[in-house]
Image 1: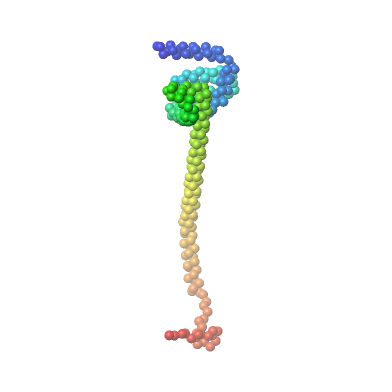
Image 2 (image 1 turned 180 degrees about the vertical axis):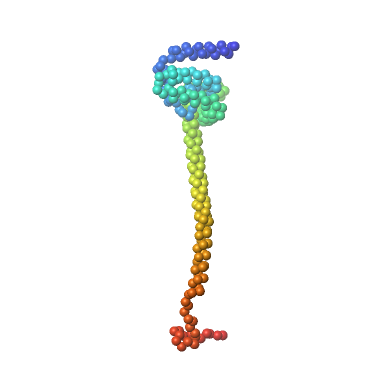
Length: 248
């Protein structure tokens, strides 16, 4: 009962909020969404990295009503509405969310390592950090300056990961293309070989018949052929001199 009353109150607040939203504000939100870094769904939702799935759902409901094509006259409202829907889907998908947050963690660790080096050089800051027992570090990471730097660093890391993914995808595609080409060439070779064998087998009778005809013609020519007379060694008219055979 309490939960249903809470939802009703939220609906009422949303209606009052959107009654006050001007067309200019709606169009500005469309422009903001379409100018976001495309690999970071948190930017589309305009939420910090530590937002919960429940925060994502509430923010989506609010922003999607602002840029809904039926309520916003901006020509690209439909595109902005679709971008929001995709961002919400990514942040509610545990695997996608974990991937984004892993890049956030990597960015934070890089900043912390860099800041640690700076503190080693700056003795006063180092002493202050030890006295505050880490409170100064927490304050620094919650500052607007750090959040902005973090957002830019996450953009950089996501871009690097996407570039690696695309390069890997290209290599896989090239390898698949090469394998497909080799397979097609192999198929063509076997096809030509099979056609040659079929052609050879198809002319077998013709070859056998030609060989039989040749053999028959050869036998006939031997019976009726004219041969020159053999010359005898004692023939006085012979045109050559027989050399004596060497013995011994």
